[in-house]
Image (cartoon, rainbow, N blue to C red; front, side, top):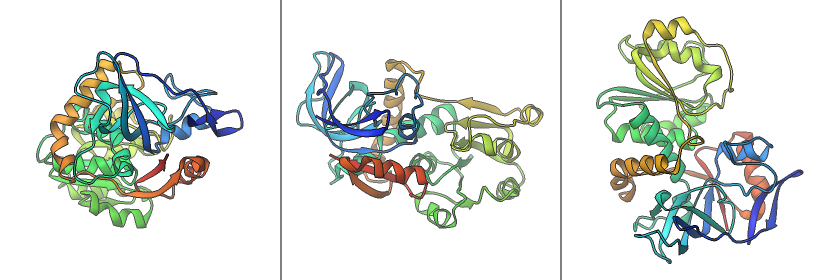
Length: 323
């Protein structure tokens, strides 16, 4: 089968062996796959948890038809149209744990649309609802809101009853579009006074929950913008993995600073994350109320161009490759 593989010279399209499902896995004939920042990390030669290195098939989320299921799998059958998360999605076939598989809603959702959803839904439900403990009426700020996961985070916040949803972007054209995805106040995080704007919008209190996709470059400003007894959930590090941190302000406000990642979670933990997400969000997914924009679609043989577009950081929403 054809697959996008990490090579010493970059990412190459190669013929590789078709995977076979283990007893608890599902084999999917992939039709579309969504790009994520972790793919860029691995393509550059870095590891993403235990994934990465020469010969690795890229891709973390995809949609297609079930080709076969393992002996321990029930409730999913060959021919089902599904979306799923798993390593190895930039290929004609991919396997994944049964707990990561969802039937595509019967609402005319295309494979391309379905492929944008798995990572964003799982990541942001876990960040906003489980780790972030958002309560109805609380305020929410998504730091780095124009990314696909950021756009989904704002929608989830609205769906779960946030009183006011705020989102940041340094790009004025992207900020203008954030309101389409649940944003009540779009903030330019390159303006050093932005924490004061957040305080003004919250009556001087500060924001209850920040879900941070940027981290290092905005860490201390997040502390300034956060309310006393607020929460900050560290999801991504687009602004750097290391930086200054005002420990005194963190303590003064008694902020819960929470790190989340899927890289150190067991299959059982991921299944529980997926189960909780489905319980809260799947009716809205089926109704078409949770969706992401597709900026551009590339065929698999143009995967280098797709990754270059993501690396340039000029897209809004998702980039998708098709098989």
